Image 1 (cartoon, one colour):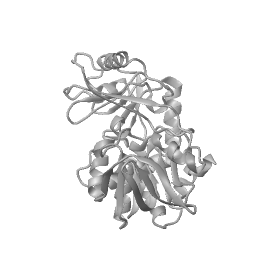
Image 2 (tube, helix red, strand yellow):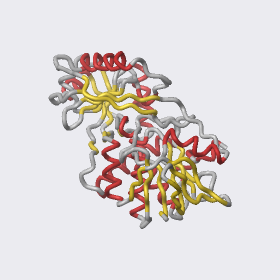
Image 3 (cartoon, helix red, strand yellow):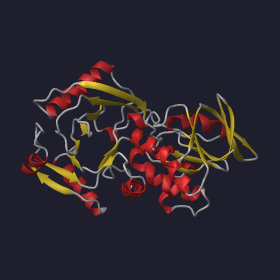
Length: 352
């Protein structure tokens, strides 16, 4: 019997497996998909706190950036970089309001004029009049990060699909899978959009938004995008191999679209935006990844004790940013530590 059974092998489940194993817990992971998960594979991987929905959300996201850095010290060689972000999704008074609001929270913000932008991004085609630079922000491939953390945790990975939670007397006792039952002392659901069907038989309705995500990667290019770039038309970053990574949705973090357009049309529109940003380069489609993003109904993370004793929930967007800090705080609670004040606004109990 596993002491802790984590359902889901994306970045959330992987970070939890790592933190629990550091505390001496025996951990197994059950996943339909290979290590790295599904939603994590289709993530843009932008690590930031400039996007937030409340002060508590900002604090959690900001602490998550430090949690990523702590992970890098614990596990050398993680695929996490800190290039900073050049942001001008908003312009004019709205951009200045964003800068002032973030600075009031203590976030590092630099205001750049056109000359400074051109100096930092010489390959950028249309250079805006002004932009904000967020030097604390980074990027990682969450699926690659998940695989590294699972390996470092030593957790056993079981390829199976969980059909239901097994429970008796108000306490979880394991799961029922397509390969048979698995007993466990406790169960953590890091199952993204697959969480509501598992909770419904327990009387808990977890609302999830319909947020499809499509991530596009291009052919390798010379270094053209040294910073994460967030424009009114496109978010994009460049990896170490020279590939541009770009979400098909505009303003992806605050995107409210419930459906994607026709795949060829969406891909071509994204490529055209990239070619406008970086003129003079042959930019072509190389591959894509698509998944439903795990966005709870109010947009905020769902973290903490579930409706059964021994059942824990870890469902959130964006897990690329939040998973390391969520894992630290949940692992503390799961292993008998005090409740974290940092999770107070994100408890599953808010849904009744």
